[in-house]
Length: 336
Image (tube, rainbow, N blue to C red; front, top):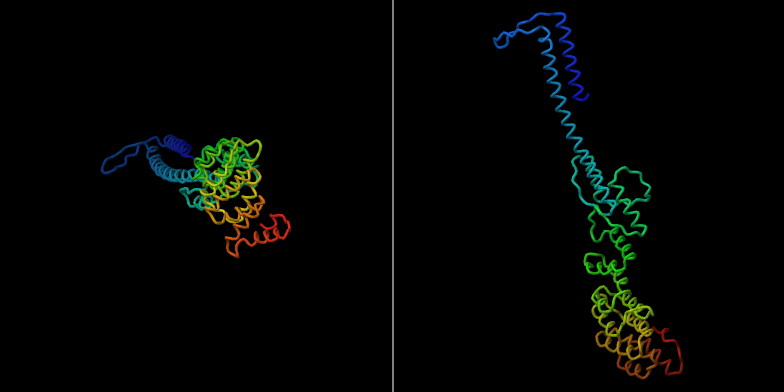
């Protein structure tokens, strides 16, 4: 029973009992309290114990109502906290929350350390704070860039990364902003951004991000440079600079692949200059140098270089040379 209703009905009952008694016994009764005689109508003496009982029960009910209010307040607070926990779990950014009740703590201990991945976006929920992340996730998965509000996501958050990739598709120039803050993002995202950045930037600016380069990115740059609609002018000095400063190093096969790649757009003199300089800095580049000599039909020069190597080195090229001297012509690529 609510307190207001209880107070009202109690007063009505006391007035009814008092009125009834007063209508039946219209006399006073004297009662001494601590030697002091107090004379009141009998009806009042009947109502006084009822009033005392009313006060006692009122404070009893008020006390437990207040306790229940505090408990319910804790549950309401925990509900809000759980909603926040679920929302961050949906956004793949679980974080630790503080809970007031053991029941909420049991649930939160799971959601605070989990990623919730919806299998269906037809979720009926009246909680607006959960509708928003569900809408974000749906759009991001569908390749739409969204402005994420109300959530602080870490740079390595998978949804944030996917959202950035969506933005790069819609706004290629944003790749420059990603590259400037590349230290906080995963390397793969930075490499994707650099690929996009290459399409509208010049070689001097591209080389600022040389540490991101690997074989794949270098060959991608070469493919861009040789395309007709490219504005990139790539010289052999640029290739040497990139190879010398990138973190991942080339092996012999990589240098041979490079030799095959550059012959599609470089002049013979540039190709020779490229690998002459590369082999002076890295012995592994000798394989690419020999390949270039043979490909340019510079047989004598290739033979002269091979004679300076150990017997067990470059056996494939030496076999090719022997066949060549015997008048047998086989495709060079069969030997590499």
